[in-house]
Image (cartoon, rainbow, N blue to C red; front, side, top):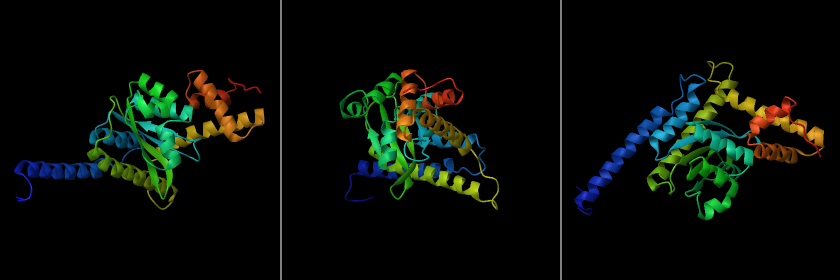
Length: 255
């Protein structure tokens, strides 16, 4: 035994080391996407986050450029609605983490600086039963291709232990996403899971609707997307739902 440490402290440190090793092994096992079907991969990745970290739920958002293409897979309906709310508003921890390519840890959305930073999103999150959100960028070299968004139904910071583990989780998701995406473009490789297709389809719907609004109003893409988001917010829709209505001719915008 280490003579410089009390016996109890030594046992706790040894237990913590064993726990860390076990979680690392579980990380490797849970984040292996080999052999998963198109429908299984996102759910497995998100469930792994919930299993490994002290959180309530998780989602993965991807971006096709700027903040116009956030799409998600979630561990539960609340996580999905939380991601959709941020995409519709164009604001929230997920959006901030993507733009800055840096982690955003909002420990208490009910009051204080986090509630003031994103007031509308914070209100919607609290109505969903969410009290804390932790968004980690997915990517490398200062460029985020998406975010891993973790939420908890009670306020409080992400523990130091979970923080040191959450970043490898995000790295594992990034590696999985990039591997699957690369495999899809390799004609010599076996067919890769195509669960990214659903995200790309939703992304195209929003882009198509934005283009239609641009032509109709004679405005730039940013203004057109802002109008689409404003309509979605005013009518309690998701931005994807509003985009589908635009494409179907159910919504017409006027100057």
